[in-house]
Length: 460
Image 1 (cartoon, rainbow, N blue to C red):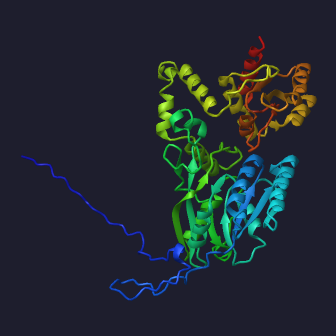
Image 2 (tube, rainbow, N blue to C red; image 1 turned 180 degrees about the vertical axis):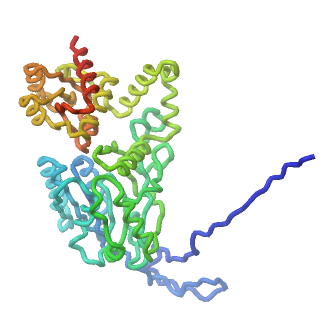
Image 3 (cartoon, rainbow, N blue to C red; image 1 turned 90 degrees about the horizontal axis):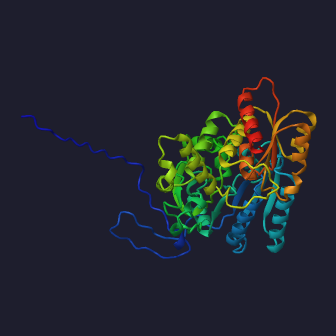
């Protein structure tokens, strides 16, 4: 007889020594602890680190005025109203923001400086395309080496407890602090189920978001310690990797990395826009983030399988159409009525094909963005077709384009969302119009001809 034997192997991994630290809430106390049988006895509390040290928030910014307005409301509530020891350094990339956005930003900052006399907020202008490492480097360039820095993004909300943790968990010459941020899912997906529609930023359930355990963008460090490991790699352009590169430097140094969740540090949901001009590693990282922030696997599965047409396994076209309709609904791109002057209007299926082609044209440099640039391509006879956003306000700023297209015999079409068009164009701001341009040797020629035929069918 052969008897099966089950073997177990138990492994024990020690991740670090036990540390005893002083509770910051008792730091001002003069309580004396007498000798006891405990092997660890504090002779006195109140001898800890300075917990009122000024925190320098470094904020890179490119456009995003509405989001910045929300950030400033929260910053004022937490820091300015309570007269916290903080300073805000905003680094703006002028090439990524139009003149009206910059004026709005200056106006917002000016209002808070006027309302809170003495509010220490500065705007620093950066040249060239967006580069987060460059922005952070510029933001701290004029600060002393003993300055306590916190790198933050405009989509982050926090409260006063976060300030305490930054001060307490960052130790000069010894320790840097990497908080783990809670990242919200798409609220439109959450609200597709009415009983889960509480999207307050303090709601930290698994249905509302996830902990970014692999995110290293938020970090608190003394400038001296940052310099000691070689500083930021400003050669990394665009989205991502600069945070991982810095974390790798800290890991290889003698500094301790303190990593912990912060239940009051929340990344508010926004559509992730992956620039096709990014190198392959950065682009893949961006796409992973884009998918991660959409929603939980359970939520997406429940919604997808609630669609009757999704079960038509033998008809891929029906399945694809059902899923595209769902995606448009969740992204809020099909909920409002369209101005009847926005004609012809692409359906969801054609819209997706147009956006895919626009994204490819942007990466091949066969695209011009904006109504003025689209007009120029028509006048120069180099436009293959024109795409316009039906939610442009007012729509009349685009209505010269259809007339010009008809005069030049160039196909034109409207899609519902300027935000979606902006994402396809590879920029973070809305785009109300674009032109796919002529290139005789283009690999996109078959797709361009397919879209041109599809647009012409809308007019029949």
